Image 1 (cartoon, helix red, strand yellow):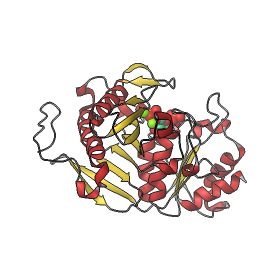
Image 2: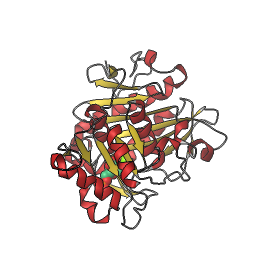
Image 3: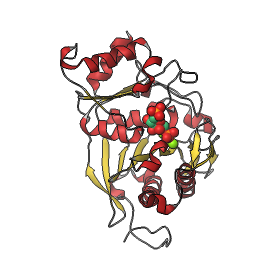
Length: 326
Ligand SMILES: O=P(O)(O)OC[C@H]1O[C@](O)(COP(=O)(O)O)[C@@H](O)[C@@H]1O
Ligand SMILES: [Mg+2]
Ligand SMILES: [Mg+2]
């Protein structure tokens, strides 16, 4: 029996994930993320039958338009994490950090709904999360080296609902079994291929790119006739979660670089709840993640909603991009 949102049963012994695979101290947090992810996947699967999920309902602190599903997802994760040991909750959809449990030992940052532009078109969207040990204040908990993360993960709502998660000992992949409502282990160590055959960047911004980014994309486009000596395919979904999952599975490169548009001086993606957790997952699967030159995990966010240029994927390609930045 799965977890029915309309008919919650606190006595239900069914867990959303096998606790044996989760470090003991993090079990309540990860169980809450999985249980809520499973609930959210049911709402997403209903699409228009669940209401106008992609309708604009306001703006978040970053000036991005908020959609109904962004707000719903944020409310569901916030509610589910109460009582799980999360002291500080930071979300893309909340301007400031919330204190959920003053005695809790963890600080969790989330992009509760990633890829919002894909809500209404039945394309994969996701949830991203990052966990730190709580420090003496909210700022000290989140504004610290990304290498201090103790867990990171994403849930992808696509043809399958998937969870990729790391606790610093490899990246595990789980698939939500719709019959049981539980995430079942499918790969205990994801391995991101060292060489790539695909690259991903929003090419509509080409005229705003820096010279090294332009040089890299030109190399990819030159294919076997150019310096690479091999053809490269191109993909852009517009959901970081979907892009990351594809690259973890079959290799590739992703770039959301700084560009010359006003307010894109640090790219688009947010360091604390998009870039840092994805970098942790990618590195734990054997890939690399940088801001173009510096490893993301060596960087410290200075503000909760700050952006960071983001390059990740197959090690050879990420090294080549750093070289081009010379
Ligand atoms: O529309 P663009 O500029 O290509 O940006 C796409 C990127 O923006 C995002 O949608 C930002 O995430 P949100 O939907 O959570 O704001 C990423 O998932 C994606 O990689
Ligand atoms: Mg996002
Ligand atoms: Mg989002």
